[in-house]
Length: 269
Ligand SMILES: Nc1nc2c(ncn2[C@@H]2O[C@H](COP(=O)(O)OP(=O)(O)OP(=O)(O)O)[C@@H](O)[C@H]2O)c(=O)[nH]1
Ligand SMILES: [Mg+2]
Image (cartoon, rainbow, N blue to C red):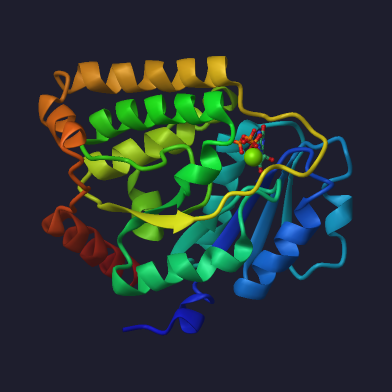
């Protein structure tokens, strides 16, 4: 099995940041202690987010205007893939995720590098914000139904995307898709035969003064529309509903994963 510290060099960390001047430097520095390649995508911030990162040994990509979380993640993914990343670990810039937990993802990737890893925030910590928790659980149900497995925390931004998945999925990432994108990538990856596992992580309350970018009404409505469309186009995926109700975990299609690995090897020759 591959050593976790060896793996750290082949996974890139991508941190989308929109007006996160209060927290992003600390998050980026701590992520840099875990992995040598860290990218912060400053999404047209107006509070000096890029400036506070000066002097750090990381890559800062600046969007001239706000592209939304989806567009920023996408830009970070392309940057990392173009440099040969085996996968990308994403985490939020507001300090709610703990960069020291990155090795948990690397340890799981060491066992199976094709797994989509979802940082599942501890339920007792998420319950502190009741309505948010409730909205998330509703989203978990719908997304699980569409994907066909029981999802523990579909809205977590702490994730590991293997390169094989990023190269295979094609999902809209325009500004309107901001918080829908991460749910849709998950559904598409699983529908394409990749497997997803949860990695338990901690979640802290936001310390900075800025308001949440997540709008429970608009974003949950966007996610519901996307899921409804996917369910309609798959004849309501009754098998998926059954699997969610019985809390059945995601399983991979070994042929699909093998084929993708083979295609990748042929391309890199
Ligand atoms: N690049 C970019 N990042 C964004 C945008 N909106 C949100 N983000 C980032 O996405 C991450 C998550 O946003 P949050 O507002 O914290 O959303 P959340 O964590 O789901 O919600 P809270 O629990 O209220 O914090 C943060 O790192 C933000 O800076 C955006 O328009 N562009
Ligand atoms: Mg947050």
